[in-house]
Length: 87
Image 1 (tube, rainbow, N blue to C red):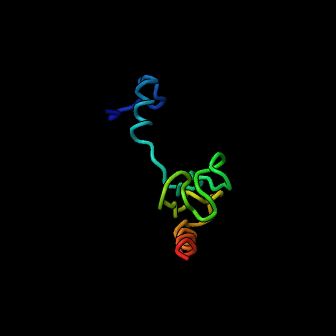
Image 2 (image 1 turned 90 degrees about the vertical axis):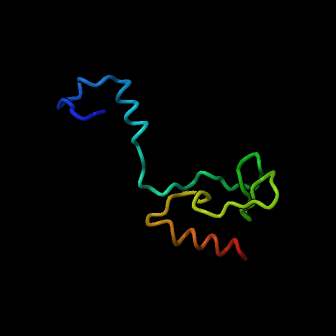
Image 3 (image 1 turned 45 degrees about the horizontal axis):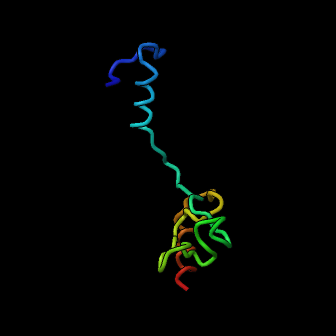
């Protein structure tokens, strides 16, 4: 649908650009920090034992509990969290 573009993009509407970005945008980053750990449910999703508040027998054991994105690949830190959670 965007086979031929002018060099400056003037021939493409804002709506078409938006559609293109929404349909084709992706990330190569490792998502982290989407599940906040907090001492109370009003402030977070999981407790210090990785148990999801207001559920039974559900834990989050992945990079989403990291408060910051590690400077390297998330595999080793996630494995460490999983090992600790299994204890």
